[in-house]
Image (cartoon, rainbow, N blue to C red):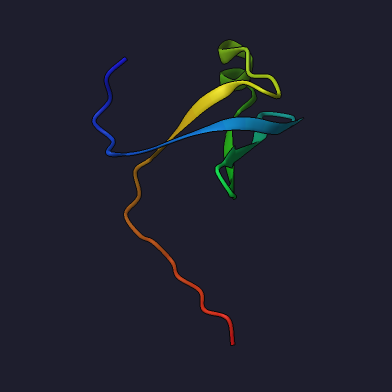
Length: 69
């Protein structure tokens, strides 16, 4: 599969919580943790399960930064 997104982060699915129409998928990317909200239908069609290798594709119009006090 080829995609135009340049921000591709490979990781492992750590947890999946499905609630109604949405699924909250937690992904471990190295020492980092990313959460993706996708449709429950998409999660089901992809056959996502804990331990699966996935790639997070990030295409965003803004990035927020935070700094500790």
